Image 1 (cartoon, rainbow, N blue to C red):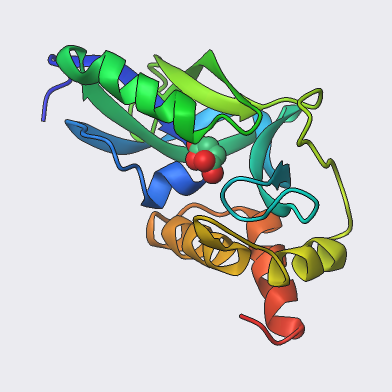
Image 2: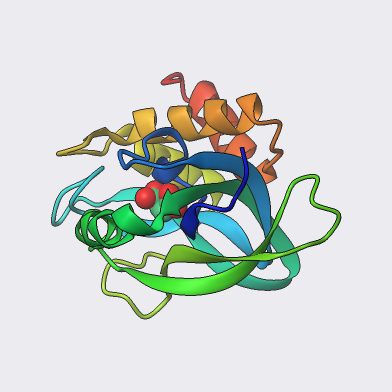
Length: 182
Ligand code: SIN
């Protein structure tokens, strides 16, 4: 379909990939340069609880890195409603940014996309940990949106279906398998 009616693009790299829960006109795989996807954000409102946070993804600045995800094209008419709902959903530390992303197969033409990113100064940011510790935390966390394991599993399977290769997500899925919970 053409992009003519698209009022804004939303770049998704975590739960928004498999559970956008907003109306969109079109979607495609796209790459964001300069960031990598990491399970470094604590979740106390979706996949964990206050005092027992789960771990969800954010984007970490990495000049040599990139993150592949999906862009969703939203109509101008639905833009405000969609962004208001996403601001509530992503309120646990994520802020709306505008970054240039490259759609797959676009021969380098970039589009501007809105991106929810949880930066290192937000109160729920957990930062790096070895993959086994992240796996243990994931395996024992649960929140109002479901258990943390389901988040990892859905992300891992969605990326595989989209032919997106992310070693960090794959290593975490393997670590969960090793400790016998995946
Ligand atoms: C996203 O999916 O783009 C943001 C992070 C999340 O909600 O998991």
